[in-house]
Image (tube, rainbow over the protein chains, first blue to last red):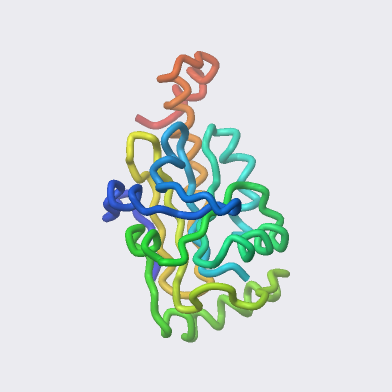
Length: 48
Length: 151
């Protein structure tokens, strides 16, 4: 059931617009995180 | 996560960063960072909107099924202990590699709990992209490395 692919179906514009919260509580859109360098995002199933 | 944590230095050496996104609260993220020994940035998406837009999967039977049990047993005997679930138990994880030009170079969505992404393949891609970026940005030391890459 692996879905590894370099031809991603993801809309990066929509993903980048999602606002996330840092550990300091500050909010920022995801696109700011990859603005100045490439980023490997590890979406974990849950904290635990 | 354990696999990726071990790869973190290679990813950073290639000029990229590892960012963890979880679906709990910031205080849970801090506990998670301590528990797994991750010292990079962690962000929270309690709404699960980022997971949805990242094309990741969610469902009860993705968490509880024969494959996820096998994955859990493998992880346990590999020394990985899962603590108390903090966040949405039905949400599955994944890995994406995104560059500043808004390109997704690697996308993996876990089909079931505990599935392992192809981290060696991810590292190859990260290092290839890093070498090309350094060349574009004027680092001539990487020219020789780039010549070795496939066209």
